[in-house]
Amino acid sequence: MLRKLILLFFVVVIVEGAVRKWLLPQYGTEVFLVKDFVLLMALIAYVMGHHRPPRMRDLWIWAFWMAVVLALGLTSGPSIQTLVGLRYYLAPLPILLIVPALLRDMRDLEFFARWAVRLSFPIGILAIMQYNSPVDSALNTYAWGSEGGVATFGVESIDFAPVVEHARVTGPFSYISTFAVFLDAVWVLGWLALLHSRSRRDSVLASLSLILTFVNMGMNGSRALLLFAAATGIPLLLVFFARNGLMRSRAFIATLCVGITIAAGAAVIFKPAELTMERGDAQEAADRATDMLTMPVATLAESDWFGQGLGSTFGGYEALGLASTAGFDEIHVDRIGLELGMIGYLLMLFAKLVLFWRTFRLIGRAPKGPIRDWAVVALVVQLNPPWTIPFYNSIAAIVYFAAVALVYWLDMQLDRMRVLAAGRRTDAVSLVGAA
Image 1 (tube, one colour):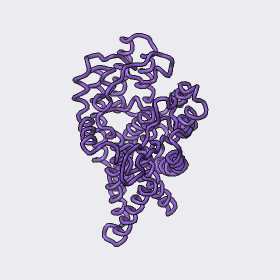
Image 2 (cartoon, one colour; image 1 turned 180 degrees about the vertical axis):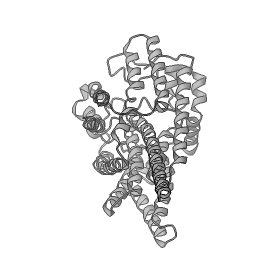
Image 3 (cartoon, one colour; image 1 turned 120 degrees about the vertical axis):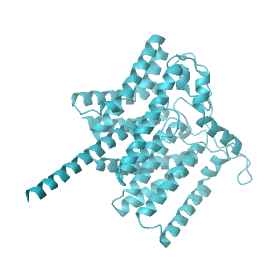
């Protein structure tokens, strides 16, 4: 039952935005909460199934987080705002228990990566259709409508028409940011599928998925996506060459040239990557990067001890028929600090650092192979972005906590492998002694 509910959960996560945008826009909030209900049912199935939970050393920080959030919620008092905050801060936490219970061995992870590759094709084709559709097309609406205007690539360049307008695509997801998270996840899963492919067909599909995902990243319009692709793709490509004995052969140069040609060709045909990099200038991009890296300093300077209250920065109250909230500078300040104050924000930073340490430790302990590869990917997910936990991006929160749960499971697998290896050595010594 648990596996069936989680399968349903992932289906809902993928189609939720499409339903909210195109089928039932008047019930956007209700559809948004469906995945929470399914995940709650999965948690109940987990408890009823008496599954073995992760070790307490893995969960204590999240138990403490729940206690602090609930205490701040009680302090704020009962209100829609408090309920909104509790939903975002607590809803993804069951993933920490459920993911380790679902995984039986490394083959389950390989299966998941292969299906992520296959899923990327219909979603990627939809994104191409959106990019080549008019900005005011129904394909380019957002979950709560487009009254504020659809984000576009409106740039002036001698290389293009005087004004080039393409919608920044969202795929089947609600917004640009949620589709960006999906592309991040599919990108790293595609590389894992390529590194661990067991057949030529799987290798070809993974390679095509990576090309399509790269093109979709440009169409999404997020410069961070393209930087993420470069920062992770180049090292993973070198690992792929090294493992397949291509580093010292002519095939290395040939394959690298073909890959660069394909990427450049995709940019020329669809123009998304170039249009993405046209947004802003080098100084503006450098300022954004600096602000992201120094965000804790600015957040602590703007926050008081107990914050403005759970849910106080949520931007969807107007769509719920309630008074809208004041905006905030999401480039410089983490909204978690504004809502939870210095106490809650410092706890969140501490949790991030604890998880970094756990993941680095796992990578150091793991031998070369699948466990280390998946641990590195889990670290990459945690580092993107570096100083925050993406509670307010529902898709990003799911991906983040799945990566954290994966670290817990991989750590237990590594311990189990070492115990089994030690047992085999003991048996071998006993047999030698008996002989």
